[in-house]
Length: 176
Image (tube, rainbow, N blue to C red; front, side, top):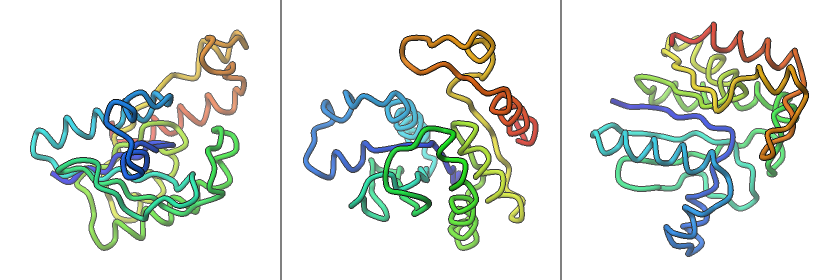
């Protein structure tokens, strides 16, 4: 099965391409990298073809990079080439969705699996006219911390009630 994974950030393939070892790349400080690449590798191990579609958030990234047999990373140009917080990603969601739809018109996945609410917004928009099923995952729910306004020590407090509503809308619009 052809599976599209859509995180907000993935930088590990570039670190490996620059000569970094697997151990160095696995120690890269972004949990999302490790989680998404582990999922992609596991799916490829089950004979699926996985493409990770990530926003180009670092200058000099290749358009495409092989992570391992069965897993490719496609970097899409949507917004500035820097890592952005969720609220700064929002203005670039439409451009990212357009890039996804364009790629999928030529080679559609069987299923689209975004990993966060912002990538979910882009995935839902990109998949809509093509009738592709979207299965949404969230790295964290927007309740708890948003209600208390406190940080969990790893991430700043999730502040916005609007953000929580958007997460609910994304989850409610996905097939699963």
